[in-house]
Each structure stands twice: as C-alpha cells, then as structure tokens.
Image 1 (cartoon, rainbow, N blue to C red):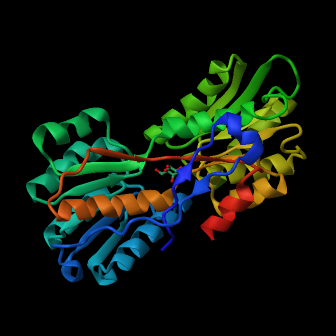
Image 2 (image 1 turned 90 degrees about the vertical axis):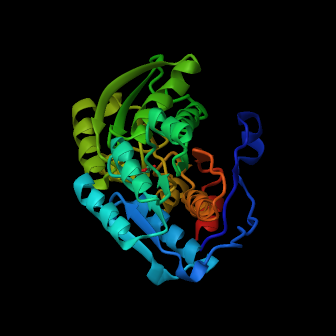
Length: 344
Ligand code: GAL
C-alpha cells in the first residue's frame, strides 16, 4: 500500500524555479468504529484487467483495504473483460452473494442507471470509479436518496495540463515556425468522458493561449499501446514532418506512439513533442531519457484510497457526496525523477 499522495499543483509562475508537485506523505487514518471489518464483504468490478492504469489502481485499492483490516478473502475482484454484459453478470453475482458494498469501474458508464437500480433494490451501496456516470445520473442519486457516489479525477484538468506542457516548450509547439501547431490526437475509448475531455481540453489550452492549431488526424486507440503504435506509425507515414505534436489520451498509447516515433528517426523534444496521461513508470523513465515530452499524473493512489474511504462511509451510514474528485499533476523533465521515486 502506497502512502496517499496529495499533488499540489504549482502555478505556471512558480514552475520555472521549482516545478515539482509537493507530496504530503501522511493521511489521517479513516475511522472504522462501528464496522465489523473482519466480516465485511466487498465486491470490486474492474472494466478490464488488461489495462495498465486500472491494474495499478486495482492493486492499490486491494492493498489499502487489506491495510485497514479488511480480509483479502472477503474482497472479490472481477475482470469485466471490456464486456458490459459479462460485468453486469458479475454485479448480479455480487448481489446474490450479499456483499456489503461495491466498488465499480463500469465497462460502459452509460450502464450506470441500470446498475445503480439493481444495487439500490438490493440495498447495496455503490462507489463508481474511473468512468464517470453522466450528471443526470449523479443528480438522481441525490434527488432519490440513492446510496451511490463517484470517485475520479476531472479529465478536463488533465487535458489542460497536456496543452500547457506544450505551451511551456521553447517554441510553444510550433516547431517549424509556420504560425500553427499541427497535431495528431490518439484518443482513448470515446464513450469515456476521460477520452472526450482530454481530447477537447488539450487543444483548448492551446487556442485559449491564442495559438492557431491544425488537427491532422484524430483516431481512437481505445487506451491500448499496440493501437497507439499502429496509429502513429501510419500517421508518420502519411504526414511526416508536418506532425509537431502527438497528443495521446493516456501513456499506454503514448508509449506505443513513442516506439513509432523513434522507429521513424524522429527526435522527441527537437522535431516532435509527445504527451500522455497517467504517469506510468515507463513513461517517466522515457521523460527522463528525453524520449517523451510530458505526462499528467493520474493519481491512482489517492483515487483508490478515496474510493475505499467513501465505501467505508456508506458502511457507517454516513452522508456521502455524489462526486469526489482528486487532482491531476503535470509531469515533465523538471519533476519526472521525483514522481518516479515517489511511485516506487
Ligand atoms: C483513464 C486512464 C486510462 C485508462 C482509462 C480506463 O483514466 O487514463 O489509461 O485506464 O482510464 O477507463
């Protein structure tokens, strides 16, 4: 179990002198009074185990719950295999097993109303994670007093940070000096707000700063490294030197993109910029090595702890806010080594 990280974002003004997130190592222990920790059963459904970021998140979540005293044998973790029908079956099995609380990373966030109703009818509170149900749904939890909540991070912030990292480079992303930033966008699963917002807000940060932009290509890579590699390989063949910036909605796709960029003989931070999100350790190593421009730390540690803490509040019968957000943090050559050290 990792210590909770509170990433304090430094303003652009401070960035030149000390562009490091400040990490507060200690978190106040959650009060478990009134909970039969030994016998509490928890159902966790993950949209897909074959997802690097959600693997880190899942491991942290289980480790944290165990560190609090919950029994590993009472924590059931299911792989939805990216199939909503399969995941709905798993949730129904949790209901049959009579779990006390569920923590759910839906395959399709649009299934939230149906899943919420299933759990609510069974009297089981739900903490949704990572894939945010739409606002109408979270408004309904409040209006109808349903025990459901969401823990995540505001993906608009991660997109904005990607754009800001480009703006912080010497030529603000306009490598060839033609007055516009020409980019390609490798998108995650577009059903997901994380993919939608990162795509929109990375570019918005550029245009808000008065830069002209040109989108050469936008293609879905479903958060997948192999797809990222193929998309960028094809894009480099098609657009060559025209590409100045490669935005990837996550690091898995960014690492695939990096393989294609290096194979094409392009030099990151000299003739092309590459941006991801998540702060996977591979991406951090490559930022330090100069093969990757920057990423945005998607704080799976704070999100995992927060998800468990919200589940505990439900178990204690406490009031729970419908939406609980954790901050992202920018990572560049300035602070990659420090973030890497902290994640070890
Ligand atoms: C995002 C994360 C991606 C992927 C996705 C799954 O927040 O950045 O790497 O894990 O969640 O929904």
